[in-house]
Image 1: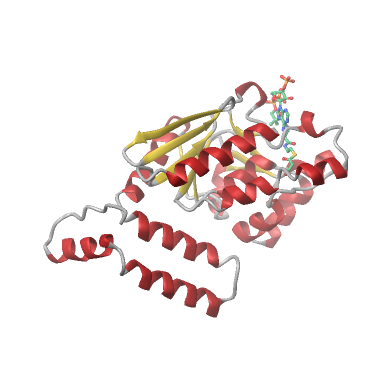
Image 2 (image 1 turned 90 degrees about the vertical axis):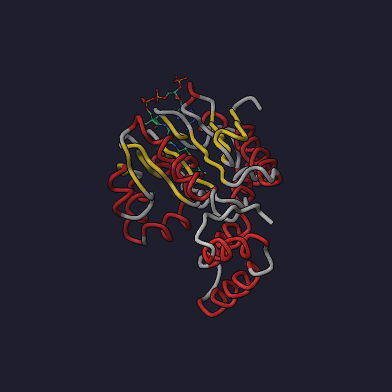
Length: 257
Ligand code: CAA
């Protein structure tokens, strides 16, 4: 991995992926996107990992797809490379994924942030889809995920003007879960991750899958899907442990089985 720092047990049960192309503000070239996909695939298979945090650095989460790499590409080059489909693979990551965002989250960087299940932002975070200023438009879910996250009017404004929104505005419109001072965003993400890592990983995965279903289907099908996943949790040791611990007035210890 040239552009990523990966710590599988940064905290108990919590892995940390750090984008590490600081001079280019973590611009997402093809290799970096593939590395993220491969890292998530490995962490998905690692039973000791319950939650993953993805972050950049204080100045930039990621300033978008690598413009220098794309500048001379033709439509057919882009179609054959199909890099942005890789983000779809990232979306299929099954464990809870938290983005810890500081500084720029632009274009593909904003799209990567939106593939996360939750976002913790520093006060300095800025979100934007500035592709229109380059004569193009979002191509890795920016129009679809942004509109679902913040509604049509705000998504239109961001995508059509290319203007950035602040962390506080992102919080107000529902794009991020919380905003904290810049020195604390990673620690806050770890705090959130630790709370989730203490839960049943089986239930967490099924619950994540069920919430994501909202964006794929209509209510009746979604409720049906949720119910099946709910019943499936009753096949887990963790559900027995969780309910037994409640009755015995002790803390549950979930094993992921
Ligand atoms: N691609 C390639 N290089 C980038 C980059 C990007 N997206 N963003 C920043 N960089 C590079 C700069 O070229 C610069 O490199 P050099 O030192 O070699 O010149 C370095 O990172 C630092 O950037 P700046 O000097 O520009 O820093 P700044 O603080 O003055 O400005 C910024 C920061 C506002 C983020 C500005 O860099 C910028 O506008 N970046 C581009 C943002 C953008 O348009 N992103 C969308 C890309 S398209 C996309 O993502 C497609 C998609 O949806 C699928």
